[in-house]
Length: 194
Figure 1 (cartoon, rainbow, N blue to C red):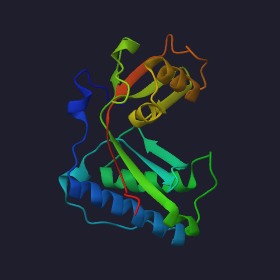
Figure 2: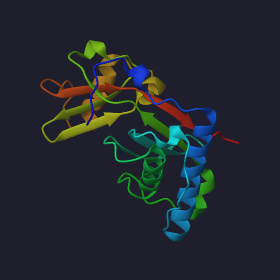
Figure 3: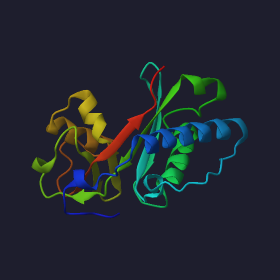
Figure 4: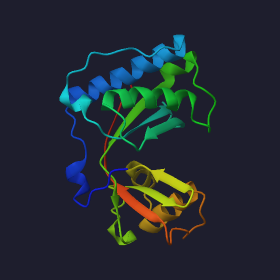
């Protein structure tokens, strides 16, 4: 995992409106093809924004807002558009919390993409900016990650965010002592509900 000791906001991937629209289209077309036939479409991509090598998450929600799947990559493994394709498929069929997405559900799902900045190890929880930072915690075999929008959407305090990341990692509340805690930011965008 790459860590940086600089301003996370400055390192967040910058994507133009056309880049975001194309990534959402790629994610939608990939989901449709994979659910229908088990195939993943190939794309000719030359847009620099889509070729950035950054970590990303894809979140699937029903139109009523209910979570339907969320999978991401924290390790950079290729261009952003391919990471989005892989995460879209995984969110639909590999999120252990849900049964696999079926073809009749596709029209009821909205796709959200989070392109992540590099992770930065922090020395104190006081460095966390709720609503701007996501968190990654590692302690032994315990690992948990929460995207920046999770705390912001729930109006959590810093303490609530820390308790939630500990719970996600299978640690007791205040179980972060001795753990490595990383912050990151994200460029977050989603399909519009029509």
